[in-house]
Image 1: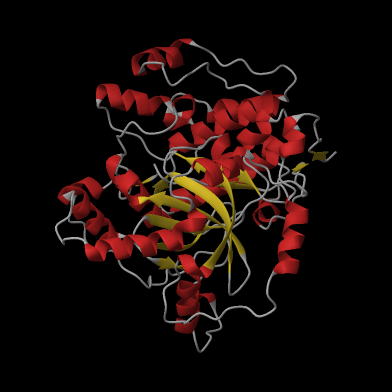
Image 2: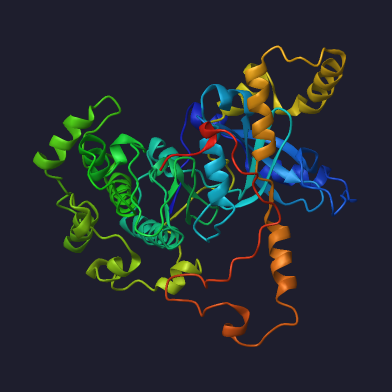
Amino acid sequence: PRQTEVSRFGWQATSMFHWGKWKKRMGANSSSKRPVFDEKEDVNFDHFQILRAIGKGSFGKVCIVQKRDTEKMYAMKYMNKQQCIERDEVRNVFRELEILQEIEHVFLVNLWYSFQDEEDMFMVVDLLLGGDLRYHLQQSVQFSEDAVKLYLCEMALALDYLQSQHIIHRDVKPDNILLDEQGHAHLTDFNIATIIKDGERATALAGTKPYMAPEIFQSFVSGGTGYAFEVDWWSLGVTIFEVLRGWRPYDIHASNSVESLIQLFSTVSVQYSPAWPKDLVSLLRKLLTVNPEHRFSSVSDMQTSPYLADVNWDAVYEKKMEAGFVPNKGRLHCDPTFELEEMILESRPLHKKKKRLAKNRSRDNSKDSQSENDYLQECLEVVQQEFMIFNRREVRDSFLVSLRPGPTTPAETGTERPKPGGPPTTTRPTRTRTRVPSRSPSLRPPS
C-alpha cells in the first residue's frame, strides 16, 4: 500500500509552510502581462522573483524562485564570492558548475542557468518539493520496502549514467537524495564530485565518513592505487540500509580516525534485519562488499540480482512506476527556520540585493582606485573572469537548430536508440560559453 506522510501535533505540523495555498495565492497575484527580456541578454538575477528560502549548506543557501518571463519555478543556490575565497571553496563551486553543465538525467537535480554578480555566484536548478530523505527520516517516516526498492533502482540509473560520463559523485547519502512531488528520487550536490578518465583513479579523502567506501580510507593511508566509481555504490548501499532500518550498517562518526575505520571494516560484520527478504539481504551484501572488485557497481550488476528480477527498468526510467511514499503536496518539506534566518539574521539578505549593489557601486566610484585589500580584490577578479555562465535552454535551442533539416535515422542525428533502463545518448552540443583558462592554481580542483 502507498504510504502518505502523517501530520503530527506540535511545532513541526504548525510551522510547516502551506505550499499549495501559497502557490495558488502567488498565481492570483501575478501580473497577466509577463515581462519580456532581450534574447541576446544573459540570464541574470533580475530575471527571477525571489519567493522564499528553503535550505543552506557549507557552500551556500537555497531559495525558491520564479522566472519572470516564463513563470516557471526553480530552486536557486547562491554562494557569496568573498566567503568562498576566504574558505578556499571556489574550486568546489567551479568543479560543480563544470560537471552540472555537461550532464542531464531524469534522476538528477539538473542545472538550468548559472550567472554571477559582484557579490554572489548563482546556480538555478530543478525545483523538487518533496524534501530529502534525511528530512523524512528525521520526521520518523517509516519507508516501506517497496518505496525503498524504487529509490534503489532510480539511484542505480543515476549512478550508472554518471559513470558513463566519468563522474564519481563521492557524497551519496540521504541528505543528497531529493524527492519530487510524485515521490521519485533525484541525486543532488556535486560540490565534491570529480571526473576521472582513461583508467585514472581518484585519491583525495573526500565524502561524508559514515558513507565513504573502505578503499577511500585505504588509499589515503597507504597511497595505494586510489579508487573509482565503486565508491558511490557502497554509499548507495549504506543509504538504502539506513532508509530501511533507521540506522546505518556501521557505527561511524566524523570523529573516527581513518586508521580505526580501516580496522573496523576488516573486523565488524554488518547485521541485517531478520525480517528482510533473503534476496534483499544478498543484494545489500553485494553493495557493501569491502573489496571493490567484487562489489556491485553498475545497473548490469544490479539486474543480475533475484531481488530486482521483476523490475521493468524502462518503466523506472520513464517514471511510470508508482512511488511507495508520496510526500504531502500541501506542505513544503524543509526546516521553516531557513526563512526566518534569511529575513532576520542574514547580513546581506537576497531580497535587498538590488539596493545594496547600487549603493556599493556608488561608494566604489567615489573611492580611490586602490583596493583596501589587494589580494582579495585580485581573487575576486579571477572569479569574475573564470566563472562559467550557462543557459541550458540556449544549449538545447542551438542543438535543435544544428539538427535542421531533420534527418530520419538515429545514425544521422547522432542519437543512439535508448538502452534498457537508460536515456538515449546524444552527440553533445557545443556550450554557448567557454571557461577562461585558470590563472590561479588555487582554483583548480584536486581529484
